[in-house]
Length: 102
Image (cartoon, rainbow, N blue to C red; front, side, top):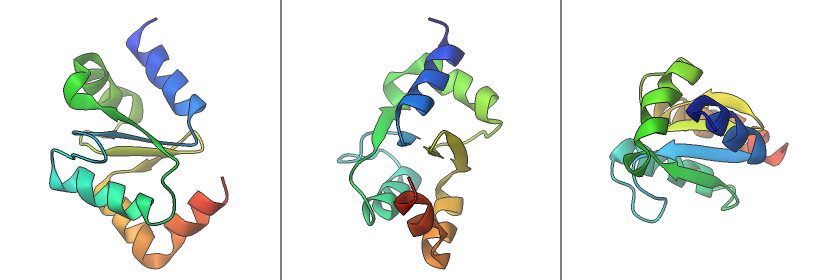
């Protein structure tokens, strides 16, 4: 399976998926850590891909999402954004609505 097809399948197979550096229990960057904390405030039912262990996904995902940095968060098959966007959504209540609507 080609990498882009694998990414599409991961996104469509998971209500919430975070492409991050490290794992939710051991994030390897502050941005990934903050994004996980914001999402975990509302649910622990999400998937993740450690891009530090997946070089092909790490190189191809920015092309697919048109977003250059990590983490990258997809909810209900839709690209939401990175850490700053998730934190903004957390602060204005939109993150709760989108997670609870899944």
